[in-house]
Image 1 (cartoon, rainbow, N blue to C red):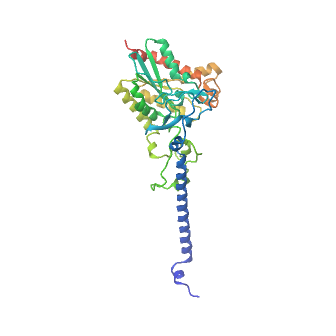
Image 2 (image 1 turned 180 degrees about the vertical axis):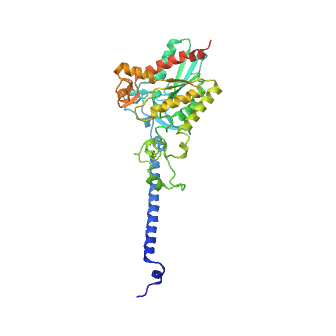
Length: 379
């Protein structure tokens, strides 16, 4: 039998190769379409969508309330650099077993009243440590500091404002100061330093455009960049880029929120605010030591950057060392620390009430010894 023109023109192995290539292209195309469909489905569970579907937590007494989750007490931020913020005007909300009250600005502080001539205002910028994660409203170190100041210098009305929100980093903290703190006319800024301050906030908004032709969603999934999280609040660690360790593969709008350069930029902006408004800045780090990992050690680097910018700084680590040694007879180690009275519990390593009081006392002594309080009070 004579060969057909097609068989004589295209060898069989080429036909098979072509069929294989076509099958591969169709498979890749199908995979790409499927990945984009997954992104479309996941967008229904991004942070903005989830928070939009939640109502404010029910208010009342701690005995009456079902504990509120973190997602219940936050809403989307009103500033591009503030991803989320606390609901304003909360009263009697049970969060982590303690009441959380917020004022009209969404700060865990008393309602703001007009500033009088004898009022000295201190604004705290921080994250869950300064917020008082796991302790009562009046046990946070900022409130304890206010009580110390009021007792020592009663002729002044000391107003200490807690703007901290769990999961915030330095960029968000400075943005909060600019957006909501400066109108309160602060006389001193107290910056709480934490080792994860150059990382992303705890929760990020991961809505993506499934019609974006700028990259392959299939390729990103194969490289492990796609989020794999349950519906609800999307935690930053669902987007970890294993290839570069601590850097997260996120939409470009988050570039300004993570990394050392944005952190230093935020500190430099804080210095500008300080100079423009004649407001001194005091930076305090609670822990600067770590057995493993690098977060606590980052606190030392951030504190050093603050000192280079001319901020007054306080490292609480030596005082924690002494407190832990007095309690346990052992030097500071994470395994010892997490079973001590310095933390809320071994399951919640945030500062306990006793540590908040220790921080407040050392902040008070530091401000008194370096002359900051005298300068604030004037002649």
